[in-house]
Length: 133
Image 1 (tube, one colour):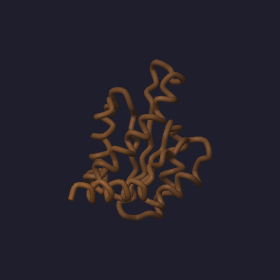
Image 2 (spheres, helix red, strand yellow):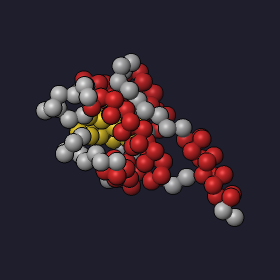
Image 3 (cartoon, helix red, strand yellow):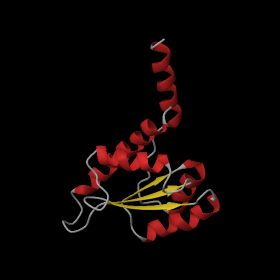
């Protein structure tokens, strides 16, 4: 599966979660998303995620706040970063990889963590490519 398509799916799930908060938000407070990454913030995966948000009408700094934390390859940093995102009271938290997801789930029981099924997405891609042959 192409990373951009998968990350667009995550961005779409995130947008759906943010829409549920839109009515409850004060006019002067933008919705916020916390992101836990294993890769650097300059990675194509994170850039595709931001582009996916933009494609859905969410522009960082304009109508959404994105607080991204990268472990830079060190998943031991995730628990600290996840707790920091909880302290910042983000509306939604997105985590990359199993260790990021585990840290996010351990840090909060109230902040939504949207999940896109990677296995089903991969299966859909395989089925789609096999029908194109």
